[in-house]
Image 1 (cartoon, one colour):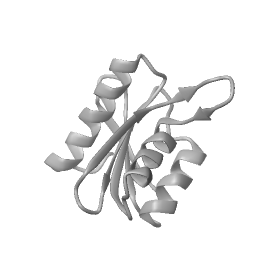
Image 2: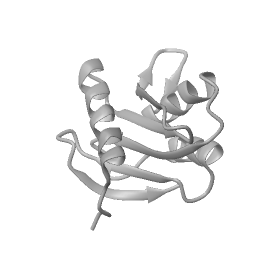
Image 3: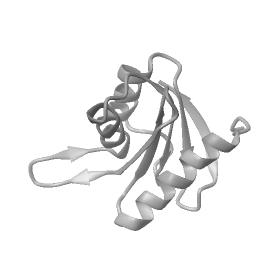
Image 4: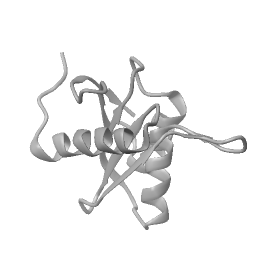
Length: 114
């Protein structure tokens, strides 16, 4: 059973879902840094570059100067976030950073911990 989400966490899920829909991507993700700023991204699939949505969102946060993460959300058809995306969240957010997992309708069905 997923944990109850507060308004800021629900906002992450909404942003991830919107990002995915707008880009017609396999996944959408959003992360919130330790100052409350949010960053969104979709999965990237180019001939020379492959990133999960979580990896891309963490990269956007880092390139904007974020020094840590409070939480993340990913909207995906998969049952759980990809290993590399979780590693990126852990690298910036530390062990235990929550990653809310939602389906394309925005229904949260689980929380993973980086």
